[in-house]
Image 1 (tube, helix red, strand yellow):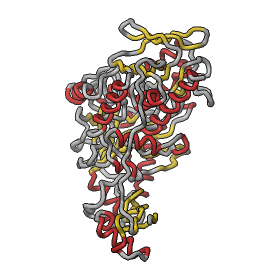
Image 2 (image 1 turned 60 degrees about the vertical axis):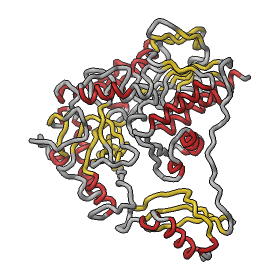
Image 3 (image 1 turned 180 degrees about the horizontal axis):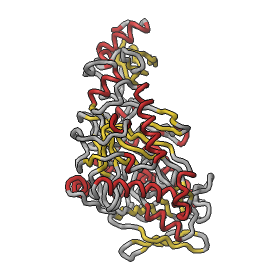
Image 4 (image 1 turned 180 degrees about the vertical axis):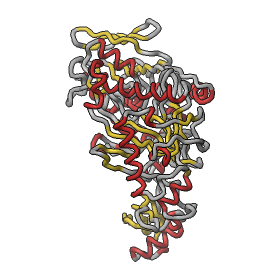
Length: 519
């Protein structure tokens, strides 16, 4: 017989299967010698009380042997000679769209401006060490997209958008740990994700799909309000009336292209702020109410949301045991983001702390029409570059100094490899953002005593939280509302916010596109 139970236990019990089995037996009145196996189905941490607990959902095998369910990938047929679908972008939306195309019997042709996932590393090294930004190959552009080298977080609140478990199981099938099916906040890690991305690409190519790297799209040809041709930088083109546009939130040249071709797009509010780094030990002490973290607990994350002067201010993309990375996509700008390796074993914790923006905040850029939010975003990044010394060093300030309007005389060692320039954040941000950040950090400290400290460093800016543009599409067909055969997709189009939701949207767009082929 199999029984499912929810149970709350200490980290020490959760970390030892024999102790957990004993606890399950005693709690549910089952003779321990009748329990053949306890399978953990879901796991989350409850740190709301001084004594940290682990919430578990378990399946107990009583007088029945446990047979492990093996994760199997969908059947992927050979699509070498099948109808073609062009996919622009090889991030999670583009790759999962391509996989779904193969699964449903169509041939994907994936066009990626950047390099393959392993070749990207040289360009990441160049930006970290030499402050050289390659406009086509960086933390945002290249195989796997922005998430590949900036963490691989898989947590999503987008449960209503599609089948999250399906996406997670596909990732497991391509090499991810099966613990992502169990943990409440699953995470792969920047050191593990590239191999999974490479395995996905190899499967697509093996089954007849095509992936073209270092192929930037420079034009989309439209005929009779229908997509007709995709033109590449080298002068070549691909004739197609089925194109999935999955370029990511930083593809500003694509947004410009759509705008100048009078293909309808919309300005979209986003959030912008800073990335704050603390010692991980301090975050553990605050969150776990302890002097030393238990070896059975992971490095602690945190999540804070506040209302300040009528605006939301919140933590974003929190990276326990992680580092801060330079994520500019063009020379003359600086951008920060964070990531953690799979073990989350770095001595620092960082998080984006961002302020909600509104359409009226972009009035100074209204002459750019639907690109107003994008140009506002760009202006902050360029200002930070000037303040930081016109390299990839970022403006930085100790946290308490920032709140007290004091330029920091010196700065602690940071995980941000290009380095820091001591600056006042009021030099980087408009007054309304700066004030909200200052007041918000005081409010944060009321929820997390000890958070407001000069041991923490503020790095500016955290600006690529989501796309500043939405590319409108029909609710039912998922086609662009104006251009037939063009499917705006994923985070760059404004329909996703992370790896999982982007992958779900990629699958949805592929299925919608293929439905028109098979009618």
